[in-house]
Image (cartoon, rainbow over all chains, first blue to last red; front, top):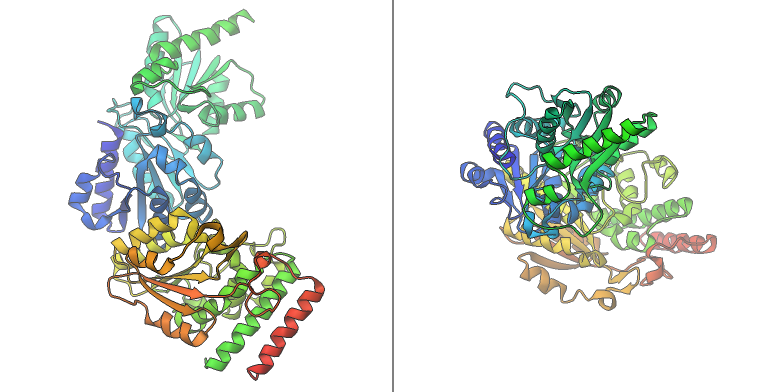
Length: 312
Length: 276
């Protein structure tokens, strides 16, 4: 199942129990798979038209009057068009809105950069008072949707639309700000977030064939970062690679680098994401492949890093 | 409160906001003076909100979209007892919550504003929530006229009409001046009433300094069932101070010592005229 479907299922279940739970959409109920929600609870979906600034401002107003608001829009538009509303109406004003960035990263594939959100983590990380969560599988998504409302402060929830295999058993304890270790290992640690945890895990399997053990961590909460899990990985592994469906500028990788450097850690380290260039287009998988976010690409990055270390 | 008392309030508020601006050496003087009569009428005649009821779910909401006119709002909120007037001595000082635009750190402020084109969407959300809950409160928001060039306002105008939010009242402080000059020279707004009506709002135009008419109009909202209400309040930027009236540079001008004295004297004379 896609995280998007899980989001809708979970939100519908929440909304059935509490009439204050609302979905607010900007002509995005289709792309947000919210049609069943709208059919089941027409009084709990607010449509504002193709107007993302309006979406976020109205969401803040609804939240001010006690509504539990999930504002749903493609991540690219939500976090660029309405950035000032996110900054002022939601974060600065501390309105408990969950901003749901759907079809995030390069999920829209060949539709091109207008529809990609490769800036959103950088933009939102620099805004005070927002929790940023990128669930990696259905289990994390369901838990994150429930956890977001409980935080009672601004949250950005970001996921794609591709069906994903499960990484975790359903009984997994999900906690905002506490990364989940998907696989233990000591040669290289992949600190990945969102959908990129899957290629990181595939790379770990490939590396295992060559006798290298890889730790794979789902850093689902990019802000606040789980510093303890990151530091543990840096202390216990020979090399560290961050992976994200985002620009190399200002995302998970730079967040981790700042922590490691300031803690005095020195280890082979790479940030894998999208370089600061006019990006190639293609399917999400093709874009991933092009930029090395694949089993093969990530395994190669790991081998290069470990070889570099060996030569020193 | 009698008409005379209300008029005296308007003059006293002007004196106080000038005093705050002078002390802080900062403020949006012209717009404060153009909207102060509207705030006077809202808080003393219209809004069902008080310091004791500010946390009640059923209170009326006032959202100041033109956040830069915050000194006017602070003065009125202090007068209504939301916080001690002495707090205003910290206006724009380091670590004071009384910053140059409204924030919720100050009791009585509904929403942080200051960037333009934000208050109406927030107000639409608050009004929509009231509708869903069957609440009887109204939401009032004050917009600057220069602010109307922000496209987000027009998104929200559409939505408010679409949801037939007759519990929402927007007021435009139509002083016709923005920082660069006349609104009609910068980016023409007229025919403004037609535009609002075309967007599905019930519109009234009023003298924004006539507290009697303002009271009548604001109390009459909603002007039409099933439609949001828009009040175009014709105002004068810098109203009440001869040398500030209709002069764009007073958008955020701070009076010199001499100008300050003159301004206070002019207001004192107005007080005498109304027999205070």
